[in-house]
Each structure stands twice: as C-alpha cells, then as structure tokens.
Length: 235
Image (tube, rainbow, N blue to C red; front, side, top):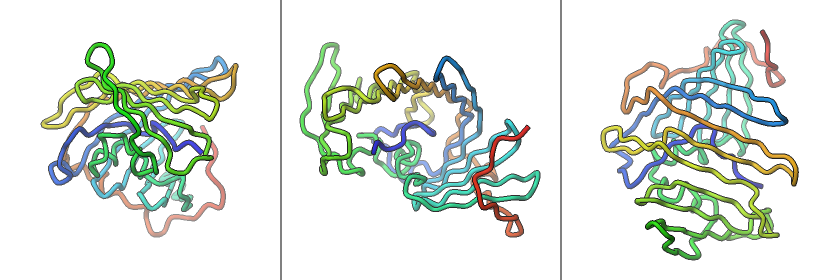
C-alpha cells in the first residue's frame, strides 16, 4: 500500500532537530477529480514531537489532532463532539512536516518505510536522481525515484511492478525561513486507473518558524461528547 502523500508538505535539508521545534502555516489544497475541483483551506501547527493540529473553518469550524502513534481526533466545538480513532494509516510519521522536524527530510522519509537507496545518477542540468527499492517486495511498489536540484527534492515518483508510474509529486517555490528551506507549492498526481487520475495542488503561506501560537498546545476538552462514526460534512 502506498503511504499517504501531501496532507501537509514541508522539507528539511540538513537542519538539526533542536534548531526548530515549531512550524505553522496557512495551507490551501485544491483537488481535481472527475472534472470537479474542491478547495480546502486550513491552518497547520506542527511540533517536533510530531503532534499536528489543523484548524478548518469550512464547511464548519473543526479541529484535527494527530500524532506519530496513529492517534487521530476530530473535534467540533459547535457541538462539543469528538471522534477518535487509532490506526497506523493516521500516523504523522509520513507527514513531511514531521519528517523535517525529525531530520528525515533528505529522502522524504523513504528510509523510515523500508526503502533502501539502490543507485544515484547525475542528470542534465546538475540534477541528482536517486532510486530506492522496497526492502519487502509485494506491496505494489517496485521502485521509487527521487530527483534533487541543488540537493533540494523537486520530484518524487512511485512505480508499480509493471514499471508504470502510479503517483508523482513536484515540489517547487522554495523559500528560506531563517535556516530552513521550504517548498511552498506541491503538486501531486495519483493515477487511480488507466483513464482516471487525481490532481492535488497544495500551496503554503504565512509560514512562522518557532512561533508561540497557543494552537500548538490545543487539547480536546475533557467533556467533549464522543462520536461513534466519522462526522459528515455539514452546512
């Protein structure tokens, strides 16, 4: 199974873990699928522990809280309700902002997920192409290619057993924030079938490094009413 890509995407290039402990940003995600475009905006707050808080205001105000252990919560302040679940797929270990915090941004966390570097080649224009292979074949991914420009990741592609690309991601618009380089635009294409694909564009703004916003420490109220099912969109 392919690991989740692009929920919130930031990259670390050789930054000490202790140097930056908190990053917040505004995030806009546009998704094109089946001829329809949906837009979701949120504010993200990530600490070096891997705890990630997101604030959404549409279609109604709600918060999500996740951590590297796979604990996931949705809190709706309007009704004081909370949905909780614990599942490996919800883990923030594959969140690129967390990877930056933990010092695994150089390979976008591929090493954490059992991929090993197989080869490195120099392409035209000074680009570096690194090929990774899965340590345990049989999960639908035969190889992964990562391209770097000036040692900054700009392209990531997953290939299936038949040699076809099943997903590709472009990272661009790098900006420096203190000693941190971040790509402010990430575009991902997921090929769901031979005819269908999903295009996701994520744009970041208002980046703050080591801020003191209280949302970093947000906790769901202890008297929130538990929900048995995942909340549906409401007006």
